[in-house]
Structures are given as C-alpha cells and as structure tokens.
Image (tube, rainbow, N blue to C red):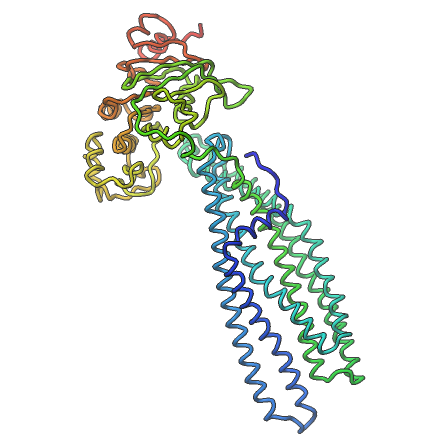
Amino acid sequence: MKTNKITRRAILGRIVRFAAPYKFSLIFSFLLGLLSVSLSLFIPVLIGRAVDMMTGPGAVDYDGIVPILYAIAACAIGSALFQWLMTAANNRITYNVTRDMRRTAFRTLQSVPVSFYDGVAHGGLVSRVISDVETVSDGVLLGTSHLFCGVVTVAATLVFMIRLQPVVAAAVAILTPLSLFVSRFVASRTYGYFKEQAEVREEESAFSEEIISSQKVVKAFGKEEDVKRIFREINARYEKKTVRAVFFSSLVNPSTRLVNSVVYAAVALIGALFAVSGGITVGALSSFLSYASQYTKPFNEISGVVSELQGALACAGRVFEVIDAERESPRSEGERIGSVRGDVELCHIDFSYRKDRPLLRDVTLSVRAGSHVAVVGPTGCGKTTLINLLMRYYDPASGRITLDGVDVSTVAREDVRRNFGMVLQDTWIRSATVRENIALGKPDATDDEIERAARAVRAHSFITKLPDGYDTVLSENGGSLSAGQRQLISVARVMLTAPPMLILDEATSSIDTRTEIEISKSFERLMEGKTAFIVAHRLSTVRDADLIVVMRDGEIAERGTHEELLSENGFYKKLYDSQWRGAEIGEG
C-alpha cells in the first residue's frame, strides 16, 4: 500500500477534526469536569478550617466542625456524581469519534480502485480498521477523561495555593513541571516503538486470516508445523516490539512520581517553616499539603495519557493512511445511461498491471447485441483481465471500450456495472438467508420474484429441502452447500436482476461434469437474448458460442466459430485436442 507519512501533530489535528462535530458534548463534558474538580478542591479548605477549630486539648469547636463535615460529605458526593457524568459523556464522544473513523476508513475501502487490493494483505487492512481504531479509542478516552480534569485541577489548585501562601505556591509551580519534561523525553522515544508494534500486529493479523481461510490447503500439504513455526516467529517479533514499547512507556509514571515526591517534600519543609514562624496556620498548612498532592497528581495522570497517546497516534496514523488512499472516481460520476442493447466494441486495447510487464496488446473486438462470445486460452493469457476491463475494475492504458457506441470511460461506473450480470468461479455467499443472498442485487425484490428466479435456474428444488427453505441462514461461503448449489444461488442472483449483458468467468470449472450439465441448462435460460462473455478452460462449454476468441500472450490469436477454428488447424485445435485426445500443446 502506497502511503504518505503523517506527522504526530497532523495526526492529532485530524483526530480533533473528527471530534469537531461533537463540540457541544465536549463543552458539556468540560463543564462537568470543572464542577467535579471545583468541589473536590474545596474539600481541603473545609478540612483546614476544621483543623483550625482544634486548637488544643479540650479546645475543640464541635458545633463548628459538624456543619463542616456535612459540607465535606456533600462536596465529595457532588464531585463523584459530576465525575461519573463526565466519564459517561466522554465515553459517548469517544465512541462517536472512533465510529466515524472506522466508518470513513471502511467507506474508503469501498471506493478505492481494485488495483489497491493487488498485493495488499487483506488481514492487515482488517487490523487497521478494527484493532488500530480500537487502540485509538482507548487512547482518546483516556485523554479526554484525564486531560480535562488534569488541566482544570492544576489551574484551580494553583489559584488556591497562591491565596494561601504565594511564596510556597511559586516553589511548587517552578518545580512540578519537571515531571512534564521527563514524561515528554520518554514519550518521544516510545512513539516509534508503538508504531513498529502496530505494524507487526498487522502482519500477524494478515497471516492469521490467510491461514485460517486456507486450512484445507494447509492440511492437504501437511504444512501445519510450518505455519506454526512462522506464527511463532511473528509472535516473537511482536513480543519484542511490545516489551520494548511498554518498557519505555512504563518509565514515564515512576519518573514523574519521583519528581512529584521531591516537590511534595519541599512544600512540606517550606510550609512547616512558615507555620513555625507564624506565616500560616496549621490548618492552612494542612490545606496546602493537600493541594500540593492534588497539584502533582494530574501531572502523573497526564504523563500516563502522553504514554497512551503514543500508541493511539501510531495506530491513528495507520488508519489515516487507509483513509487517504487514492480513490477511483465516484461510481455515479460520468455520463448516465439506462439499460443498453449490448453492442460492445474494444478498439486497440493495451493494458498492464505493471508498466514493465505488458499484458494486453492491441486487442480489438466487435460484439453484436445478443451474441454469445467465448474467451479461451492458456492460463495467464489475459482472459480475466479482459473481463476486468469490461467491468471497469481497471481502465485500459490506451484504446477504448464502447457500449452501444458510448465510450465507457465517460460513463458512470455504476451504470456500466449495472448492465452486466456476473457469475464467477469463486461464488460469494453472505452470512445471511438464502432469500437475502439471491436478492443481493435487488434488495426490494418480492418473495415471488426471488422464487421465480430460483425456479428458472433449477435451484428451487434443493432450496425447499433446506431446514428453513428460503429463510435458511447460510454461514460464510455457503456452509454445507455443495459447490454446485452455491453456484446456482449465484446464477439465481443474476437472473433476478435481469441485466442485458452477462459475464461467466470460469463459472463451471470447480464443479463436476454432471453438475456442470445441470448448471449449463440454467445458463442457457439466463443468456437468452443477452450479450454474453464466457471465459472458460473447458472447451466443451463453449462449442455453441456465436464467436470464440482465442487469447495467447495478451493478444487475440484466433477468432471464429468452433467449426471454423477446428478447420484452421491452429492454436485452438491444439487446445481442443489436448483436452479430448491428450495431444501435446506446441508453442509454434
């Protein structure tokens, strides 16, 4: 994935922009924090007054102390209540921000070109959208919960201390920020470690997804021990990066606590000297020590926030790399067209996935509406690439493709793809009911329409034998359905949308011959009166096509009907003979 590096300041700024829509909730949260801190900071004042009412043995003003105790209890309860409300508000804000980030990242993944996914580990993308956003959530929640209160506590406490004794307050104000310098010094070195940790976690997620989805292949080739060894190696690197990141981030809190303990001791010593000289009362000294403790506490919390933010920012940067991925033009951008007749022209098409490796060269093809065109050839000759260009998953490097005489590069992708029905070799079945899977392309279809589509492709019979018929919930990839049954559901899905053009890309290559014959009958019903492109390795499935296009090394080597191509005794005949008579395919 090609990405641009983003600085931490820019990352933080973008997180703030994601939070901007919830500014009123943030203000409300800040006011709740202000009320909570104000009440908690008033408690030391009350305690100091109570202490001053205990002037000696037998000289305790109980009548004056009791109301103070009630006031202390009221302040404590009120502070806790406002703190709880603020935390609830911050939880909501954090959820909204991270939800919006995840939604934006996922929306980007739906609008990037297909080429974006070439060579990208899909499990790694899942890690960024799910795990990395979750880490951002934890960091932002901790930051909003502690930072608000921390800043308010520091400012308010300093005001109270200045009112009690300006000289001692000045000493506290000068010494305490040392903890911030310590935390910043350590945190600046942890960001890189957290970023490396996230990258290894992405690699681990990608590998896990790849192996779990390919268990049959792993077991078939006896690779269980190999994949376990590779996973252990990745895990070991993840452990190393994590331990290093956590070790350095864990230095922040003890370091700041040490600085703050020195500050507290200095305040106690200076305050005691002032108390002995009569500069302040014992109760005021008691209040001052409480404030000194509360003043240093936010610095410990803020240092923890800074440490957590390093991980959150590192993960947020990776999420923003996905969000910033180059998008293809919107599906609806371009000339709008309705249903087409199905005349297709490919004019001098050149294309390559990599500039140094040309794939299609000067491909020219004219297809009349209603024609059935088969595209055949050896693996890697460009058959599927030709289909990808028709669907505008990619655009040609040169040349043009027209649909009813209109250049498809000027047509909205949405309209181009809506005019094609596509059945692939690898059928995609959602974790949903049979009914919802058939209605994928037409969600508003009635039950009668869905059943008619299933009957038309001969899928109704096996569907009704499922436990809940059309309401049977299928697991991912179809669960216990056979390859042929999954394929029939895919065909019914296309039959329901009734597009004017069809693409069948190796649609029967993964099923047995008997099932292929049954599905071929469904295809015949499906293709009636429609322009159809049939990509196939089995030449037995394309003998009745109106036109057979033979691809070889990225070029159209031959074209014609089955009988015409056999009579030419060329490359097609060699392909045909290799399947039916076991002849070797020559390179001449």
